Amino acid sequence: MTALAFIVGVVLLVVGLAVSIALHEVGHLVPAKLFGVRVGQYMIGFGPTLWSKRIGETEYGFKALPLGGYISMAGMYPPSSDDTDAGRPRGRMRAMFATMVQDARAANDETLVGVEDRVFYKLSVWKRVVIMLGGPVMNLLLAIVIFTVLASGIGVQTATTTLASVNECVISADAGRTDCVASDPAAPAAEAGVLPGDVLVSVDGTPVSTFADASAIIQDSPNQALSIVISRDGAEKTLSITPALTTRAVTDDLGRAVVGDDGAVQTEEVGFIGVGAQTALVAQPVWVGTEMTFERLGAVAGVMTQLPVRVYETAVDLFTGQERDPNGPLSVVGAGRLAGDIAAVDAPIQNRAAGILELLASLNIALFVFNLIPLLPLDGGHVVVALWDGIKRFWARLRNRVSTPVDATKLVPVTLVVVVLLVGMGGILVLADLFNPISIV
Image (tube, rainbow, N blue to C red):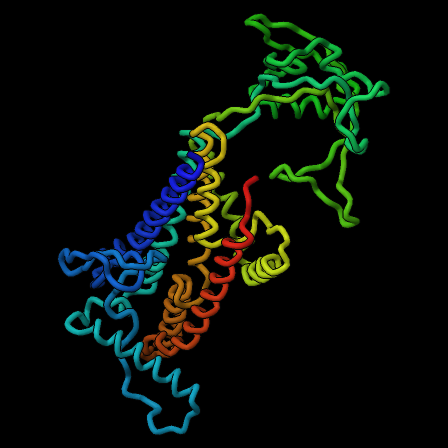
């Protein structure tokens, strides 16, 4: 049963990624057609074509390697010019790059036949930018939709006002133990008669709807008597509880202990009554999904800005056997393994569905950020080319001259280097995900 659940989780993620890629390409396709560009192909995947169908002037289909997708637009670049450096002395490397540029120009020229007025490079700058940003923006919108379904439809795991546990005593965070001893003072809640299953109604006259609301008041009120109203068996009861002053570890937004420059865990003094809350999936307001998206966007962008360093660290962890950073980069293989692990855990199906949806939303955010990197062949690289062309046109107008379109085929050698680097980094991540995977336990 666990193996079957693992497979189901992997399949669900693969299907979700396929839909994400398809919608990414739709984000390019729709504005391209609206602006009159001839689109010859809309393909999901690369390599040999498995299935295709022509509708109008566009061939839609699936290819053998589901590692991305593309649309083929007429005239991505201007036609080949007559200026050539044929006959000039050149080394072997320069000759190879020159051949690559000529091949790219020849392939581009084929798309210009019969559609000279429906080509991409002749569009205004803003239209080209809209077309190229359409794909990444579609991934961002999909992430917002998924996080909204997750937060408002399924709910977010939240500590409720129903108490799950009541501590017997107060143990300082630096005591180095978890069991009570005779010298430990009794926990204020236990001393006041609080029991597991009680529901917090108000603290110090303030109604509380979440455990976090109650905790904030209690932690800010050490050694101050508080009037706490609880509900037990349908009846309300008012208790007077004085939070004890105790030391606890400082945690970040993810609940992890904050470590100082000296390597020691940072601590703070807070009020404490010794209760733990039950957790449940609680539906959030509809705007929370968007907030979650942009919070995750910042974290993913931070990883992307350090991608080469993060991949290097992943490679070091792979060869040394060290545990990987759970917030580090991963490949599609790693994402599939995580989805399988989430689906196979012993938890309610709602929790497992929420975990897979959160993973899929995060991958869409990664696709959004990754495709904005200003390097060809990524969408961000095409945006830079369009902006550079716009600057050239503007400068030419100021000088009463005619600007020639930017010929991005000259950047094919640079594009090849970028592709090789991306394939290399992807290969390292795949190996790491196979032999040193990130674990959710």
